[in-house]
Image 1: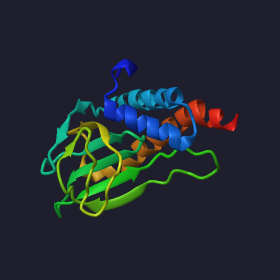
Image 2 (image 1 turned 45 degrees about the vertical axis):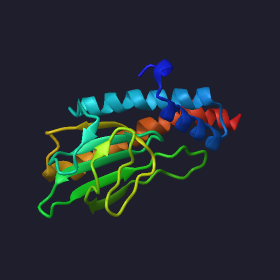
Image 3 (image 1 turned 120 degrees about the horizontal axis):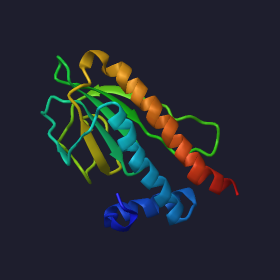
Length: 173
């Protein structure tokens, strides 16, 4: 995505993130653009490359979503109970020694997932707008937890490094 063509609602969210973290808009935009690009690099390396603007809640495919604030949602296909195994990682900007810890749960999507919408599980709400959704046929339920663990670890490592390079150093000045 070209930084000159950022949708207005994304720009507003990036401004809010910048204000919340006490940094300039340009720094947060740089951070956000790098995460946007790394989402492709990581998902593509796992063969997850079918980008979509709408994911129907009844579709029996796994998906990965990126939110405007850098959170990652990894969802399995429907299991035997017609629920999804979900791994959610809110990768917050850290200026201390605390860690980003993933959440796991089993739930149903309450509605279809669309770009610019919030993911609404029946019990859990992701409050940030979704900016990317990718699906894949190759994440099988049997190895979902292992792949989700790998993906989450990789996203966390890369996104924390981006935060360190773009934001944390700026805040320490």
